[in-house]
Amino acid sequence: MLILDGNTERSMKEQAEGGYPREVCGLLLGRFEDRRQVRQVSEAHAAGNLNQDRSGDRYDMDPTDYLRIENAGRARGLEVVGVYHSHPDHPSRPSETDRQRAEEIWQAAESWSYLILEVASGRLVSLRSWVLREGAFREEEVRILPISH
Ligand SMILES: [Zn+2]
Image (cartoon, rainbow, N blue to C red; front, side, top):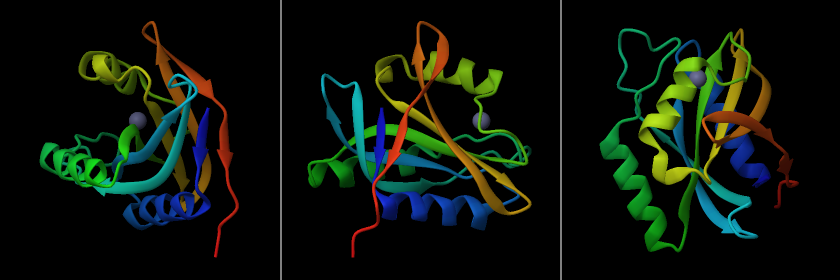
């Protein structure tokens, strides 16, 4: 299960809509709970998409951004608990490319959430999250906490 702070959800929404029609990507920082079955997210940090040729339907997260965000989180007691990216004019389901990438690159990250934001005509229409289990994505529950003031 993925638990999202309401402010974090709003921040990702703004990033995904603002980046349209390009894919945006980033890291989810927070804490693992319940033997890593629950990911409690408190921050979503955008990273650069290095894919220039197909930025409408591919992303290559800038590794420099990755390290910077991870280190900044660690300094505040937060871990990387997942990644997110947008799907401009595509459903919020992982593509075959997403699956292959996750399997190849993120073997050490099998308890990560893989969150996808579907953006249609510049508006967020769905947000779904997935976990990789034995080479296949399974959808997980997303709980969004009310925005605190
Ligand atoms: Zn994707």
